[in-house]
Image (cartoon, rainbow, N blue to C red; front, side, top):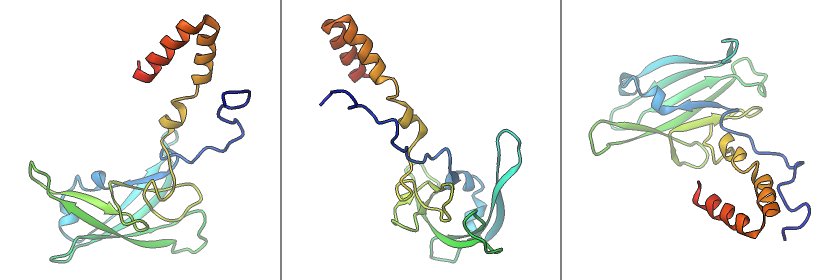
Length: 174
């Protein structure tokens, strides 16, 4: 334990990140409250931040019947589906009543049935699912411990007192 080669292996493949996936955010969709109050249709388009070229688009149709939570019918095309019609899926919505008033909407993940605010489609996948179902991580969590080995190596060269101080400060998050 702690010997040569015991750190993070360079060859290990990192998990896909939420930043590299297309995200469908219910909070962004629900800013227009009328969209979920009645049946509506819209088209969402994701654009490349550098070139502003459309990367993907999705047709969203909200169905709302009396007494039932609204549902969203999604129609989109992915790189894995050769069918001209693309993929069609239904995502259920749930709503909660916050203490301060109003209505807050949530997606129900089609796979695990958890209540989530965002659904993702990673590269080379064809379904909108939550972060846990796609096993996605955040880019910041992958980068957070990148220089730990270097810092502990520097502290080790300076002696045990400095090493203990660095470990204490590291554990406190300072």
